[in-house]
Length: 171
Image (cartoon, rainbow, N blue to C red):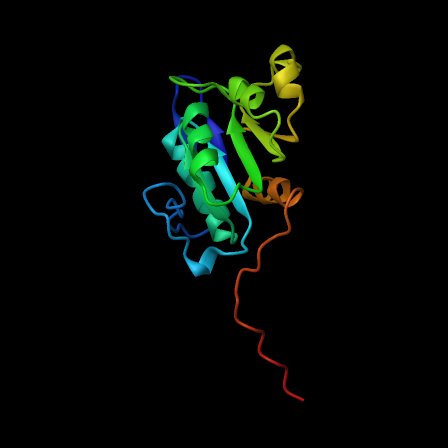
């Protein structure tokens, strides 16, 4: 789970092995490896590196291809430069410095991509603003691995965790 404590401390608890996120789908790597073709893509946008990297690693462990952005402007560049648009965007609302999650939602209002807001805020006024009200879903921090995967799978089919065919049962 991801647990945000007051005072800016982040407590992280992992429930699965860590693996590296795939971060090479933008201009610095124009070649898309065959291993990721056809797998669901998730853009994770959060200014907290520990949270962003953990969410990315958990999604990667579940078989998703992940892209990362530090703030809204960075996420717009990823959308412009990626060879394919992500299938889902996981977006933090409060990011600084740079473009906020709310401004990013306004800028991408015409994109056909579901946006799931990840937030520790339960402030009804913020969640009811026109830009945030258009979110496809909400993940309230702290959230569990199961909640994360279930939310992403609301919008894309879960990836196959292995391309190896099952071993046939003996007769």
